Length: 147
Picture 1: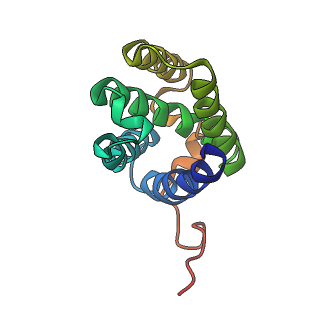
Picture 2: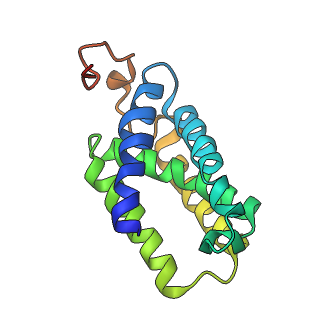
């Protein structure tokens, strides 16, 4: 499922939302906004009986997903806005989690928060975005939207 769903999530969350939020906000703030929205977007999976996520504790998972949004924002910026890098990380982390089985979502949250703090320690609020590139995007620099 991850191989098919996660690329679409990254198109929406990183390539569309994060890129546009970075046009008017610091990358860290953009990643936090995307992380919160990304977490809230998954709420139906927590209440859908029979869905694997319905057995997960929501708050530790939510903290982990917001932290992971910071990591993904950094990877996306660091790789020159490469959607492929974000997709590979997203799919790999979900598949790895499914293979090993997550017994403690609190531990998963702690690992993701520590990783996000390490990213912030190295990149700061810019999340690897070059300072010169932190100027607001112009309409010409954003991907075109066809109507």
